[in-house]
Length: 107
Length: 121
Image 1: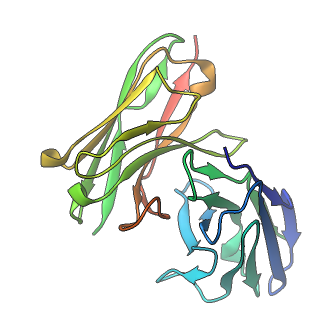
Image 2 (image 1 turned 90 degrees about the horizontal axis):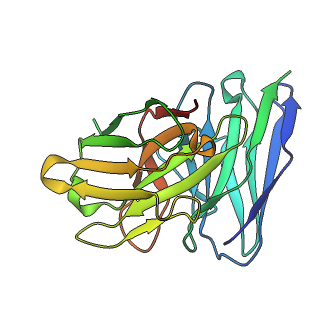
């Protein structure tokens, strides 16, 4: 099973600041890494697929990068509505696995 | 509108059984691989099970293998999870999830609203 390690677990950020979340895979997964956002009381929502591909309807301040074992989700200019938990997920092999999540709080 | 709607959650005693249902609308259900993913409150997301399109295989997380059974009824746009021998650690919000079309295991592009399963005496 591929283990995904996310960091940090929690981040308290001022609006307009830049947020960087990292996800490290226990073995190489190419670009088969996806990012999700889960706001309180809502279902998860796909933000970025295949490490860096944007999703229609997702604000352009969200971007992803990386390949192999190290990946990054960046939020350029945090907005209040971005308060949420963020998860990475690998689809290189079954079982599909998720990172432990990063909770982003607005200061 | 593309939509997944789950039902069937509830409070159940340890050792009991529950059947979750997911009804899809707004897309050609039969061509998509479908998954169940659960959110353990205070912890995180865990993939539970999946069934491939077009008579493909079924797959399970080690934690539920032998206790859960997944199936689909394409004529009813329906996706099911039969959960037996439930344990306290199965307590979670269960999401019905569509996998993006094409290739081998893609991103999960559509999520249902979730249904809560609580296993407690």
